[in-house]
Length: 388
Image 1 (cartoon, rainbow, N blue to C red):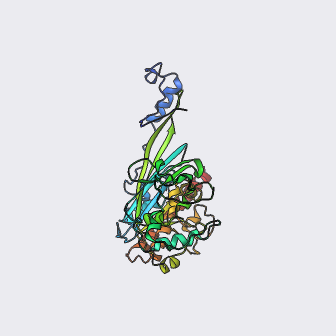
Image 2 (cartoon, one colour):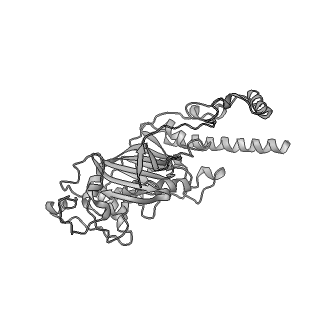
Image 3 (cartoon, helix red, strand yellow):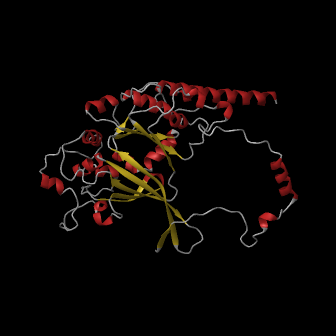
């Protein structure tokens, strides 16, 4: 099967290709009536360009101090369907925190490809001492059935053999997804292709791991000491979205870059996975958190982001041990106690990690007022319907 890749910018149109004047000629009086109705329609309500809220419920004046200089940076992976939700709290984080990056993440519709490059390509090749990153990941990996992460205990020559040598004995058993020849692109150490709902259809990387005939997974990479050391120094992940082009006899795919994210050393993912650890345990391992990655969306959307971005599994997972009920609970369904909004999760995490910047509590006050606005507007709509 022949597959072509191309970069293409396409725009949708409803114009009949056989009659280019179609959009200029009204078909019926119904069309004329619709245009008249549209011209008489009331103008849209003014929207604040900073917080993206209607002017009557603008949040900007409620934040006492903007651009708080948080020492732990925050990266928000925001579901594409969440950013325009009236109760989305990322808008508060964007106004309140200086060291913040928001990345829009799409669901995988057909295929997506991931390329990962190291920020420090030489790290992990000379056998440095075990780091906090190793301890955190080993704690998580030893909890997984079928995996045993052993201590280092290797001489330098043995460590270097963790990397795949193109000229090594072909009879030696290797992970099918670990052939360095499959890595495309300069500096790429991990290359993966994914289809819908988190199914990895291809995975290749430069490290040698033994998966005992199992299907390659991102978690397997961390069974290599060399891989853990290399990833400890941080990496850059690029996601390329693939779409099928319709109307062609041959299968043609267009590939467009969706995002490229720098994941610096000291990054952790805030996500309550089965093997996530608490802040106290993280501190006991002397792991210094420098960047907090947060998923923004409903719980189902956040789960979709997590499953369709397998590179997140390369990071230590952090959980918040809180019994607080989210302020969202009054206007938006939450599955259980401890399930918080994005801004609540960020503020409580930063405080637990020792962030001492003043003004974090005010962001929660702003969020509470935003929820109050939504509740009041909802009551007004219900009251109006009752009168009608």
